[in-house]
View (spheres, rainbow, N blue to C red):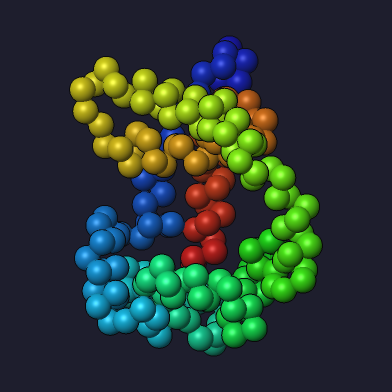
Length: 188
């Protein structure tokens, strides 16, 4: 019987893609703390993406790269579409809401905003998010311990998105692999 017919979920360990999306970063916090000590906004990519073999990654060859290390800096950047246009990302992933600025962003955001109103979010919390969290925790609770990154945080967002899209459960591992490979292509 095929995996799809049996409903079985193929095992997928996202860490097998360790050298793609995550590189060899095991603990990003020291590098992030060092970046914050250098300033709220620093010229160049975050140091955790830089290694001896290359200069990090660039969204577009020759484009200046900056890293924001504080909530205030990120908020200022996201609210200043004139100085910090996000349109350069459209060259990589196509035009999405996050790459739009000004009136175009406001118009498109209005189209989807009802899905993120309090009532809709409360329903998602109860009928979707809590269900996914409970199922994932149930999967390792009997073990007495777990690596929460592997057992919960890697699977959680992908499973929520997969359920929103209506994907069958047996396709979750494949969808997770594709998601990570897509994100890896953006960073390489």
